[in-house]
Image (cartoon, rainbow, N blue to C red; front, side, top):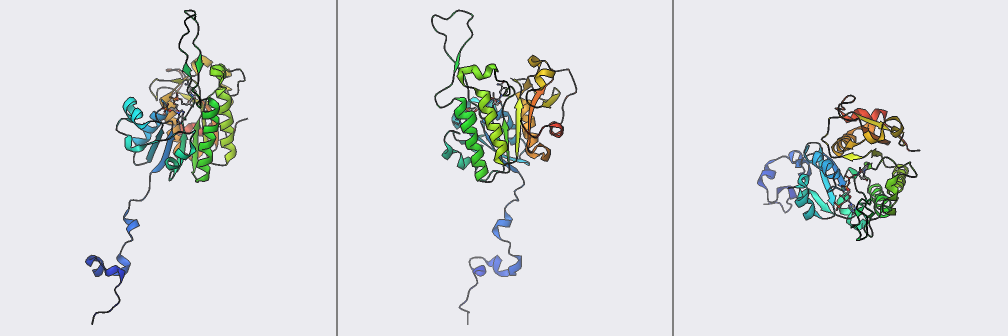
Length: 295
Ligand code: NAP
């Protein structure tokens, strides 16, 4: 007589029927182990953000990147580095917190590469031929909206869902009251970036804050990189020669993602002119001499 009890293990699966119970692997253990670091890059369609995203994408054994962009179709059609990456991009706007949650969920680390973007005013009919252009920010896209409130929104959300590391790329010059970048479009961009840096430090999330000098479009890995703090490097080196390739900033960001020594550091970053100094091959050495706070 057939027993009325049928073990769930015996239903639908003769293979299972033949195996002793302890050899049946639970389904979840058949899935690959999660080895890659899952990273959200915001501002991923930007000039530095897309380089960071591209570097992460090209090392799939280590990283699982997602790029937050405002318009996926525009991003994949206008930015060479994002071509073919549609499935790894997600649409969101940092001024709309509800669009950030789906992007941030399940991530280990966040790289903030968003920034308010000044736009050039069209020349007025009565402007003089050599008159310097004036700039404005879009409504809702002022530095206060993007570099302060938008950054805080990202930090708050990262904290609330337990991300393990936030990397924020800001800018050198933010200790200088009269820095001309603050005057652009009356936006005080550097002041708001600095406020966001302090907010991140106080949030308690492990952080890395990278404040580069002027960004260049030159190739990476051809210069010596130097770290400092509180804009002091501008009085040691010639300010006009401190520019750093975006692609080198991106290398430092990627290196910081996995270096324990990069955690809870906030530092300025410049590059020596090409041909001067010793080329920085491994950016992770920079973190040992980088600073832990802003003051
Ligand atoms: P970028 O090309 O201007 O990119 C800024 C990104 O922010 C863009 O991708 C933009 O998205 C995104 N963004 C703006 N508002 C947003 C919003 N509401 N929601 C989501 N995304 C938004 O930046 P970059 O020139 O590579 O600079 C990277 C960082 O370095 C910035 O923080 C910048 O201030 C700083 N920095 C720049 C210089 C310099 O010389 N330019 C010097 C030092 C430091 P869309 O693509 O949709 O427009």
